[in-house]
Length: 222
Image (tube, rainbow, N blue to C red; front, side, top):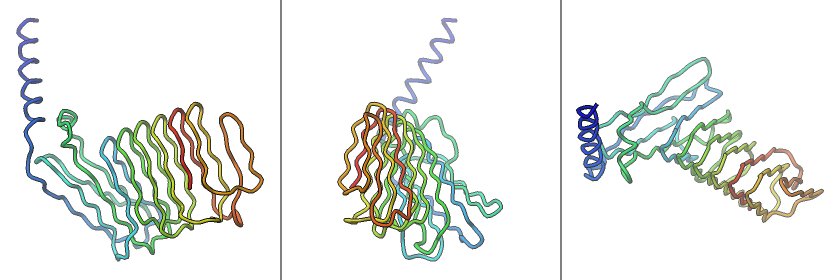
């Protein structure tokens, strides 16, 4: 038993030292055509993720790395593209040296984008999506729309949710739910209904559904 404890101590020490040693940044870049693809699934886990709408012809996934660990896995199924990262438990010990994933999606893509994560933060930039779903636990979610015309569904446990639609009167129906977190709405809502745990209402023609839900995280909508 004593020998086992010594071995484990040595292993943990090595992993700690490797976490403190910085490596040069490298990139794993992959591209995929979205022809005949209706759904994009992004599984970021504990890795921070940027989702960017861009004027490009093919999807681009770029993983910024600080080690020689595994990179991106892309899998195409029936009308579905899945983007995930290979598992590497040693990265849990590399404080401040975790990889960072950026996925650039063509603005012409009209299908759904579904993000499934855990503690990784999700940031959306210049978004022009049509159907965006983000599911997480403790990671924060920040979505910034350049041209809003999208269904938006965000669910977290304790992560903060910050949504900027950047329109005075977006055409949407809103539902914000939080058990203990604060809710801030900077958009004038028609038929506004508010309770201790829920805020709902409509804006403009109410064409799109924006649903934001957390257990203990704060929600900001503007």
